[in-house]
Length: 124
Image 1 (cartoon, helix red, strand yellow):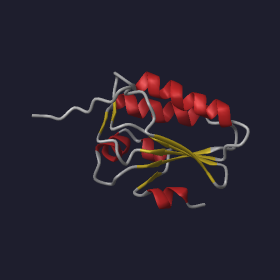
Image 2: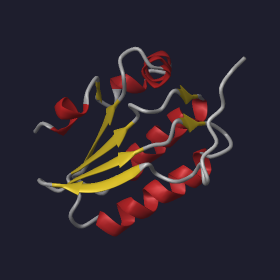
Image 3: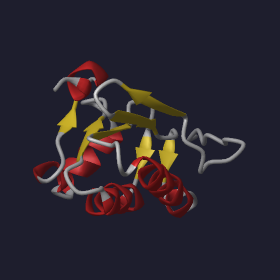
Image 4: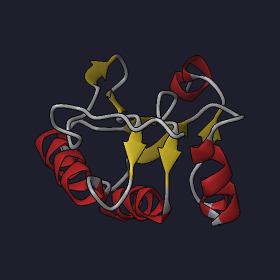
């Protein structure tokens, strides 16, 4: 029997924080799939638009994400291509989690740094 997480709005970001050094942290929900990826992408892109003039680093936190399919890969890729000039993308995900495996299998890790813990992802 599998467990499915139902959020009041599965397209909501779990957390959004502006951190020192022009870094923005976005914590993504427990599941990213076809049911919520488009809405999540819209929310992430609106954050990018709102912070475009002051964003240096965007950190996507997938540490609480326990399911991610190809739609999550598409989201990460689209965010990477839509970053403001000069900004960089970092992903943090548990080393034993599904997002890490999916990002590895699809080759995204070659283009986007993936960190095992948040403190490493936030270091300059």
